[in-house]
Image (cartoon, rainbow, N blue to C red):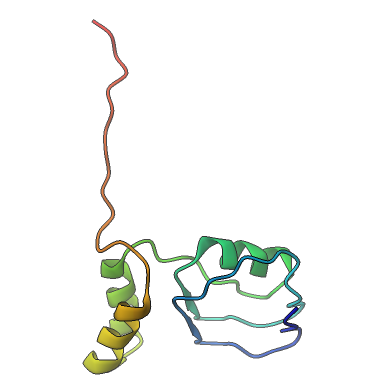
Length: 100
């Protein structure tokens, strides 16, 4: 099992990571300004007591914006987007449960 305890992972780009194991060891690992696209990984980082566990981007559009804000080059952004398993956009459905 990986042990990230005390690691400085600030500004890391955690995209395309498939994390399926519980109990990640990451006490005091710092993920300040990191970007992640996997909710399970983010949950495990918080549960493992990591500092500044990254919020999860929900779509490739949002990921592109985050990477652009980090001043990544266009070629790096396109490569990272090709690795991500995120949907292109978030589709919101409104379901009416009202009965007339």
